[in-house]
Amino acid sequence: MTALSHRITALDESATIKMAQLSRDLKAKGHDIIDLSLGEPDFDTPEHIREAAKLAIDTGYSHYTPVAGYPDVRQAISRKFERENGLRYDAAQIVISNGAKQSIINTVLCLVNPGDEVILPAPYWVSYKAMVQLAEGEPVVLSTTISSDFKITPEQLQAAITPKTKLMIFSSPCNPTGSVYTRSELEALAAVILQYPDLYVISDEIYEHINFMGKHASMASVSGMYERTITVNGLSKAYAMTGWRLGYLGAPLDVAKAVDKMQGQYTSAANSITQRAVIAALEGSEEPLRNMQAAFLQRRDLVLSLLKHIDGLKYNIPQGAFYFFPDVTAYFGRSFGHHQITDADALCMYLIEIGGVSVVTGSAFGDPNCIRLSYATSEEVLKEAIRRMEKALEQLT
Figure 1: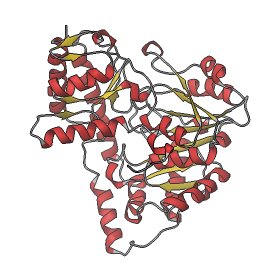
Figure 2: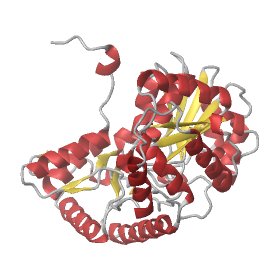
Figure 3: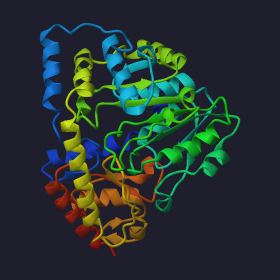
Figure 4: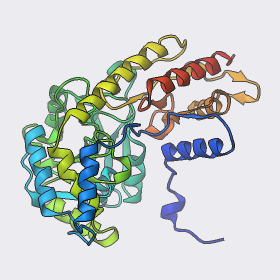
């Protein structure tokens, strides 16, 4: 047997990808499965963006690009940051990558040394912890509850910081909880962070435009935080471009240069055709974006109304993204047939095998009491999925 590295053998598989693959495998065997595991909009990419990509193909954008991306595309992103976030990043401070996920891991590898501590407010996106471990850092998980809307307090943050703390990573709107930090909440956290000159923040803002609270607040726009924050965003969620694979970051110049250097050694630049579509996405019509946001809000309200009929679930009301993250501890210790519900992992397997609905265990997000379900699909599918879940959960005794 091949002697694989400790790096890969110690690495957990992505739980969302694992459940999505299980769904595909079961479907291939003829099972009727509704997949609510992946965070992927069911909409097609808006037409004007697709047309921009076709034009790029037809006009010869088929060659290597600068590692950090085409200069004019980075300038478009720069304009976006200033227009929408009040952030002035020069093109040299922007690096385009193969998805926001790569933007995050690039930054982690550039900032974190072995033994450095990285604060992860939980629930956190599944890959944050694995990224820290790949960099040989030490994840420091700050747990939250539904009663706090799954948001950390300044007091929690203060108590978690040690001389080894180098970085905090968080998302707002949050995957998996849909929680959104207000500007005043970010300012309170910033007041703690600014006490520590060597502490940086990765602000994952990929769900910026799927925000039901109004204007999005960026951590880097808080007074004093511009030089401490790496702002990550992308096109996948808001513009329904998951398969196009393009993310980007804005950062202090030295961090951006480091990320450019890192990326140049293992993937080089993002796809040239996708890059040409960025300008159309960021500077074209916003009507498709607003329509998708309205649809997600309508779906959230639908799922909220349906979940109210299921006894035992506890949840917050998501203010962004497209997930619910209900507490399912009421079902622990119950059973049906050979299924023993010992934890959220077991409940997820029960729901896919008995209910025909794929969701993701909360343990992958740092909260073993919950499960995550995505409502980034049609209302008809959501109604059937929740009906199946309710029926399956009612059978547990």
